[in-house]
Image 1 (cartoon, rainbow over the protein chains, first blue to last red):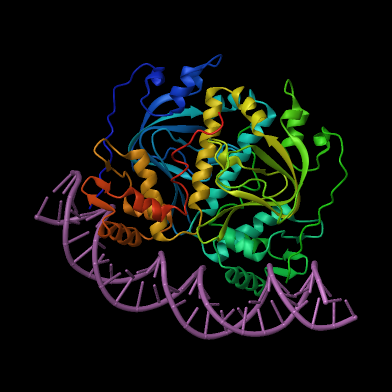
Image 2 (cartoon, protein in one colour):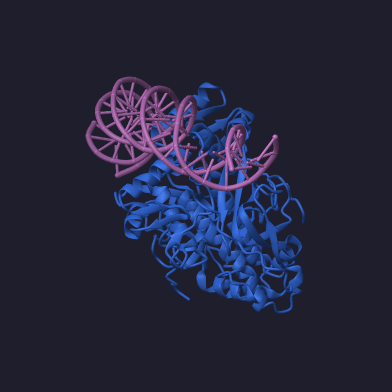
Length: 253
Length: 253
DNA sequence: CGTCACTTTGAGGCTAGTCAACGGCGGTGG
DNA sequence: CCACCGCCGTTGACTAGCCTCAAAGTGACG
């Protein structure tokens, strides 16, 4: 059995505001164009750019976010590449989907986006989006930022990582958020809960923790854990990629 | 080694607008209260409600979304419960985090939220949020809805499921989105890509597909796959829980 | 017609889960 | 005050689902 590429018809270029005629269900452009009151629509969304498999990616991990992409036809995938060159797909995006949402909160792209089959995307430059969000209340902006942040975390943890990688990433995450003045990380949840969250058996959590302790990377104390070698844990957790985003670099304003 | 609960001090009730004094970094309330121009702040966020472990959950899976919860102190976990009664934790929420964001797009709560340790949350009722979002452009609303939707999918797929469960869930998802008039699902990506996405080896994807075919649940054809028994796949994929959300029930307007 | 990527099938190994048992700790109640 | 109980953490032995490795078959394409 062989799967065929979904055939995409590349219609000739049309008027820029043909988003109103967009056949894609729930397409960002159609919805937006129909009610673009007061905004210069042309700077919000440029319709229909072709993307081909094997061609230059829409964007690459590590770059600052420059635009969101609304899929109009075909299929886009986002993926990360580990140290060995293996790619790990984080998401497939079909017509109507938006690519790049997990980078919205800090403008830091965590994955690379490329076409799976010949595709069409509409481009929503970051400038217009920033102006749009700036018009919202602080409350609304926080809502958006927090959702994007949680999405980034969920995508990072959904990867296929070893027990050591997941636990190290989790501990670093907790360390950033829970560390007290004396360097102690008081984990509020039980090991059972941690394992449940990280898809590990309780016993595996315990064994892995003991392993870290034996390596001298942390110490388990009565009241919590003390990280003794953050670099070592970072080295382990690096493929998971949640250490970087938690220290936002504040890219493009 | 035993982890201790983080000690939470329950200060006596104070003025409702003490969000300005909220010590939580990046707290939704503090940010919002500081710039609550034109909105009745009291209907946006009610400060400081105590939540205790073992007590009634903040909300339960299956309910309509009635409020978001901003964690002020302690730790909240969200989890699903499978047919065997096992809970699967989907997220831990620490001070400054918002709980319930994955339900924002369709008001359908996919998980149950409970306190891990004695905690405090601020409540943001759905009514105020809806009014807030209604004030945004259609574009902004779509942005929010799509991010929430993708978050829900990422959280669902991040669970610890068998190859059969993940593949069945994936196929149902694709079926909903890609099925053509003749009932054929033309998958644009390769089995290698599918496996990469679902954290499965290519061989496992192939074997599992063949297994489904042998059961008579689907047929692999030249141009794609044909689902012959959606109920059977639903039964397999049920624990993953991405079948329900894809048929939004349109709860509270 | 050769190449290449993808799919398919088989055999073996490894990571992590399961099962079982024990120690420690806190809470509860006699 | 202490015995009892339940939950949590810890350790060991075994198991199983999935990955790895290897190789052959298939279709697309130049």
